[in-house]
Amino acid sequence: MTRDPESVLAAHLAAMQGRPLAQATRDRLAQAMLDWFTAGWSAIGMAGATALHRLAAASMPGQGPAPVFGGPSLQPLAAGFANAGIAHLREIDDAHRAAMLHPGVVAISPVMALAATQPLPMRRAADAIIAGYEVALRVGEVLGTRHAAGFHATATAGCVGAAAASAVALGLPQAQLHHAMGIAATQSAGLWQLVDDEAHESKSLHPAFAVRNGMMAAWAAQAGFPGARAFVTGRRGLYALLQGDGPLAALDGELDAPERLNTATIKAWPCCAQLFTPLDAAREIMDRHRPAPHEIESVDVTIFPHALKIAGVHWPSKAAETAFCLRYVMATLLLSGRLGIEDMETPDLHSPTLLALAERVRVATDDGFQQAFPRKRPARVIITMQDGRSFSSLRELRRGDPEDPFDWPQLQARMRAFVPAMTDAQAVRIADWCATFADASRDDEPCLPSPELFGR
Image 1 (cartoon, rainbow, N blue to C red):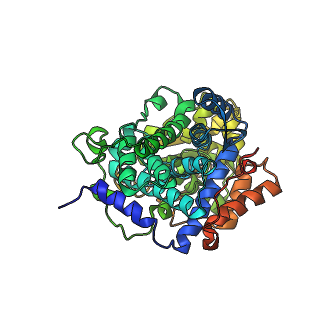
Image 2 (image 1 turned 90 degrees about the vertical axis):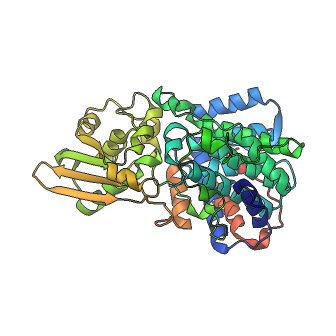
């Protein structure tokens, strides 16, 4: 009898836990962990992090053993919720081209919260995180571009990924793992209307609620509650009701391929990932031709239309909108030669020099570029100088994509750039702990994330 794709996926997740992990996957997992800690640390001290601390403590009260970025330890559900939201605040957490979501915050956050409360060997923690990536990315790819235009896939597909990660961390058998994903799918939500209504500050709640619902789904399955079996492909499953248009084969196909973790992107810029290729193109022009900002006549940016459905802010009215404004990030990069955390947190939105350059940034879309989306993210930047010279660059892939990855030293340097307040000792401690995931000899050691790793 033919099994539904969801059953095949559940069996695949169970089988993954019993086979050796390739060293490349171990290394990539260590990188994902370092990226997650970088994202969380970068937001410590932000008003949004303080609000998430308070929300988690108020709605899920009680001190607990699970560390939280920049705050007191909480119960695991509260910690998973808070850390997922905090690690998403800066928009520097990892991403994925085909799935169009942020996998690390939904896969890692619940596992780290659970690891602090129960005996969890390093290998099972690794399996749980890898399962979270596998499910979130496969479901996100299946849901596709039409879904991603209306829904934040980190909240929808990410909720199912968080459930898978939690279920594996809890040691649930295959049947209950399937139930956990099915329960989580019925709680998947996350509308992009918040962007249309300028509620960008609430975007971090999408992964936070996804992790909360995913963890609860795993506990519910453990308690004996059944879940939807065909939670993606059923008549009233995610694909039918949430405007899915991606390839259904992504759910249970290519099971012998490397783990989906290996296909994620680590972000090079502190803004929405939809804007990376134009920034990469501008960086190439700057490195090659060094155009003086005051001599720039115009900057023409052509990009795939989907980018502006999410990052379509014409000009920011507040710091939370800077990450979604192409004109702002482009003008800032060209003017100062860099785009840093401080440019997003404390922007001078009324700077005459910045405004003058931003007014010369012209944005257009290309339907041909859209046809390559989401596998590629084409963007062309043409900088025309006042003396008539013109410089052009076309980028289809982003720095940090699997085809153009960071290495371990570069990721350590990236962490220090995104978290300048971190001390050398703290940076070494975090990097060393993340690196243990790459060491097979430590698989049987307990996974015990210390509060010191979270800035406490």
